[in-house]
Image 1 (cartoon, rainbow, N blue to C red):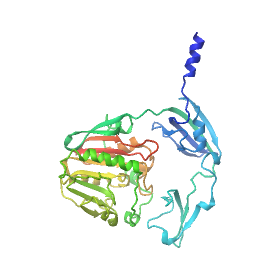
Image 2: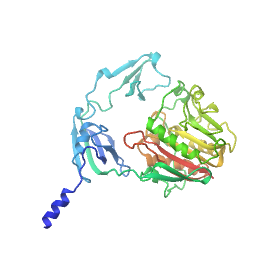
Image 3: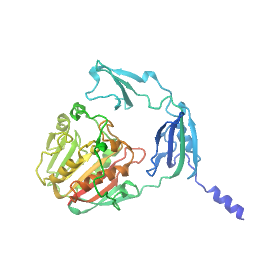
Image 4: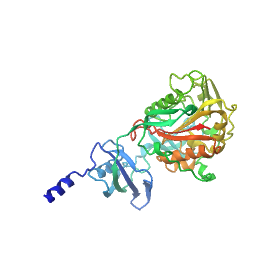
Length: 403
């Protein structure tokens, strides 16, 4: 009877199969031992859906059949990984088609949607672009451990909003680590960052990089809907038709609700032509806040200050967050939202160190609020509003109320 019980127990051990949402830790290295990627020790494990094409084929197959706690080492041929290199995917772009500010080493997205790397800038102004995956043609070795299966998201998060009112965020994911960062805040005793944390790959004048209008969306449709719905919940707390909003680092779209009922919408960003196309704005000012963080607005003027997927570009957050505080009314709400996408060459060093570290990035933004000005913000909160975790762009938000 005991033997039968043990056999039954063993038969119930869950193993990964197609359709499962799994969590893994891994270390990837080349055949010479060079590590090219790994999950961070102590950080979040990597999650994906088995069989959905979200990882290279050999990695997907290696995980199938693993039970939680099981480790495996696999060697993947190029065909099982990123494929063989294709020389016809290395092209020279004529100088007339090269956007201003392009630099060697930058990651760009082609009109086809494919990602590419700028390999060389020629003397005649043309650029050599390589759309091969960085690891194309390589044999890869992965150490993989299955650490768990994703739990279904628990929806609904409560945070403090405009005027100190409690706000229900129905599409907030309560059991996400992102939503729990400030449940029990852990604030540093002093400003924890140094100048090197704000260094960028491309330190050239930002005006050159943003000189050409980019009438594109920088996050996918699902993420846009998620932040628009989040704004709707927040803005609904203020007197309709009377409140004012400021969108910093803005462009041709602010991702505000389509039925926006604001009296005043000011937008500021890098490109005047983009800002002029923002149909929800009542006023716009082109301004480089990294060059001059003083905002061209009076004290206590706005109920909301917002920023979508641009906080990672701020190299002078101390001054900028103090300015946000100055121009906001007491009880107003600042809303900083971000994803795992950016122009890597223009984002600050400590941000791009791990683009998938949602909780870590929330802590960075929370620290910005906590110290700038110290005691000036209260009810700092974080919410994961990602519409389809693992398959859409993530959308993470940090909010704070002016004390």
